Image 1 (cartoon, rainbow, N blue to C red):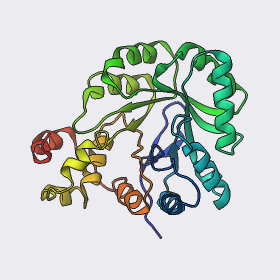
Image 2 (spheres, rainbow, N blue to C red):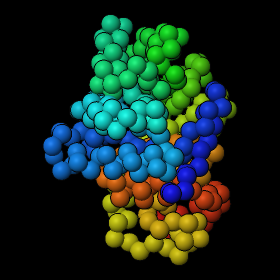
Image 3 (tube, helix red, strand yellow):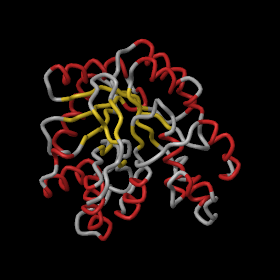
Image 4 (cartoon, rainbow, N blue to C red):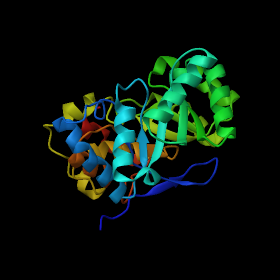
Amino acid sequence: MTSQIDSRPIPSTGEALPVIGCGTYIGFDVAPGTPAHAELPGVLQALFAAGGSVLDSSPMYGRAESTTGELLAAAGSRDRAFLATKVWTSGREAGLAQMEQSFARLATSRIDLMQVHNLVDWRVQLASVRRLKDAGRVRYVGITHYTASAYAEVEAVLRAEKLDFLQINYALDDQAAARRLLPLAQARGVAVLVNQPFGGGGLLRRLAGKPLPGWAADIGCTSWAQVLLKFVLSHPAATCAIPGTGRPAHMRDNLAAGRGMLPDADFWRRHGDSVGV
């Protein structure tokens, strides 16, 4: 049996959420019958076997929502998934139509987390998401962003609105969110999903051919991906990291970062140079 990954409480309810999930951007935007699609059942099997649950998608990710819904239905594993998706459009009717499309594509009557993506028309869309939550069709409400230029607006919304989740970019080479947004989310009782934990992929690619430093073993890491994920999870505001993958081996490797000790901030200050950031 695969040992289970750690979990952290969602502040607004206390519900435990596993600390490693899976983003579906690119990896799940594949057609049935292709070699890439054939690997995806193994990704979900690895996630669930380790006690993971979070699958983050979006109507902007091609057929990723449909792929996710089809795979969960085929395996009978919808109840094991924490499904997160997004609304990204302007206008009340357009937003409602897009969210209904997500319910259909994900083949579910209830979405665990609906997020207003990039704060597009956020006042209107948040109101609609809250109505869906009141109706029992959405469990949690959140917002997302991934660019530092928007952080002032993200901060303003975090201060003004009662939210369950913030999804934001944060990585060893991209720490701007730690200056204000992560502490504010923690103070406001908002769970944090960390997107782009590998620096948008660029950092991990740069490290690919570089030997792991000796201290990686001291914190239980056998790959650079695990090092980068351990860094993200070391922040007390982080609830779950959601690196995207369509490969079972990568999913298993990522999940290994969700077990064992997490270094403190001083550790990362001392060893950051080893990573070259």
